[in-house]
Amino acid sequence: MSMFRVCVTVLSPTYLSPAMPESREELALELSREAFAEQRTTEARLSERGTSILQAASVVIPVAAIAVAKGPTGALIPFGLAALAYAACAYQALRAMFPRSYKTTVRGGALLALAKDKGATLRDMRESAALYLDQSHAANLQELRSVSRDIERAIALLAVEIIALAVALGVTVAG
Image (cartoon, rainbow, N blue to C red):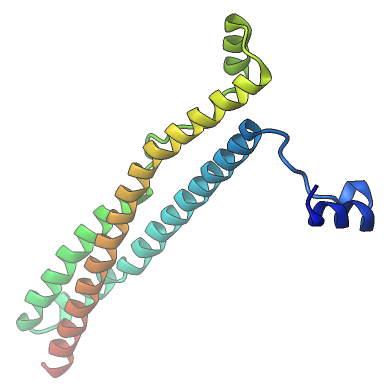
């Protein structure tokens, strides 16, 4: 028994001691669950970023409408570029927000039915669940990377939009 466990056992009530996995399979399943939960959090964060980028990019429409109606013709080119950048940015942000085909967690009932059918032990079930979650994690990682690239492109296009909008406003004010 490690010194840490001895201290915890001696110094604290039983209900405060840390839960330790009883087997390698239990530890593997716990780690797989944590990795899967982290992916779901990352997915939600990326979707929120897509929403924020889309909101920020939407400034070009009202400004462009005013400038085109009252600005000089020289402002049309940068405003047109800003509008194109907005459309491309909105497309990338919406792609990032659109639901993907993520693999979900282990279905307990299906795992139990299969285990009964195959005569599997609890240890076998934990091992199978951990392997399934790891495979799902790997597949989902590809989807998350794709969403990350969409966000990166949307941010770059937002920068183009803002620069083009600033140039167009400068031309409008100077004109």
